[in-house]
Length: 398
Image (tube, rainbow, N blue to C red; front, side, top):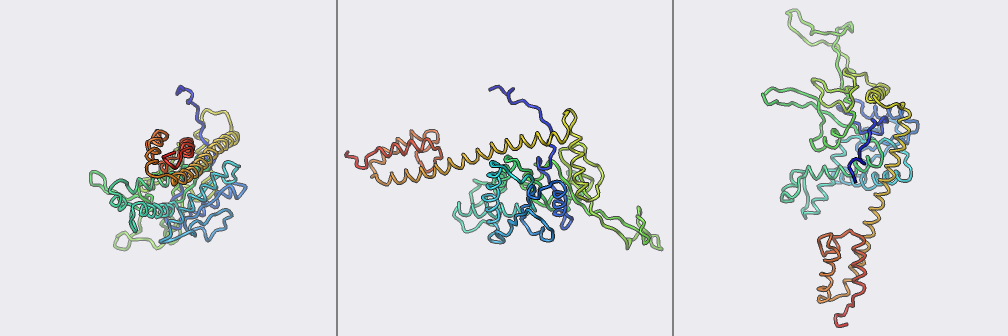
């Protein structure tokens, strides 16, 4: 097949649920509120936006379509949260994509707690794998595995699979995450403070690097005099020394481009506002709409026409992916059943007959590079092995 058959024209996606987005901010800056108000404004059916809550920050808001996954476990049982997320929620959403999904946009609140749950699951899983009582950190996983595994790389691979599955099944993902102030030292010794994601670099690869739109919620302070007028310079006392004012106002703004202080903002759009935008769901959606329109230079279709076409394409692609996942899962289930049947058959034989079986199994499982059928998932090869062993007599004298 020529690579030319793969060449195509790309038109920017115009729906909020067609991209990965990220809403970040410090504690209590309004991340969950913005999710609630923006999705209620954007979607007519509440079921089209689902919030997966890895923490209880939603409790003061009326939300109609939420999964409080954090209730599945905490502390020592935190691993159960990730287990439920990937095995029940993700699998269920992929299955719905095959039959016709209602959910379009998935919220992750917060991404930080999602990372904690995945980490807990990974450390528990690897403790069982390496036969130790407990692994307390991703760094320790390297030591326990004799450096066969890097804890952060293992976490990346573990988290990547379910989120990739959701994206391939046609779901948009909007993650909410915490920020912190970080001090950075440059190569020349100069230091500066900036607002960054609170999560570690591996988690950033999963959420920040994949986001097409990043909105940072920031509490902007306006210093005023006692009459309520904004000050541009510090007030001074009778000795002409600068002092702080007793009056100020704090307002939350949305930042869509990095500034000299805020590093975590921006995206893959050129038409993003350069100045902070007043916090509101209406303004958030307008920024997204304007950003999308700014990318559409050559198409003759309207945004509404593109929405219809792209939704049809997304549904078709998602259905194909979901059907492929189902086929794979069915094949794996059949492989497990065949392995069990082969095991039952092998129990009939003595050692001398097993010497006949191993060479034949080596031929049958040549592509898998092993004679151990228990390590093979090739259904056809397992079927051949089962048919072969069924024809063998258990008594070598016959």
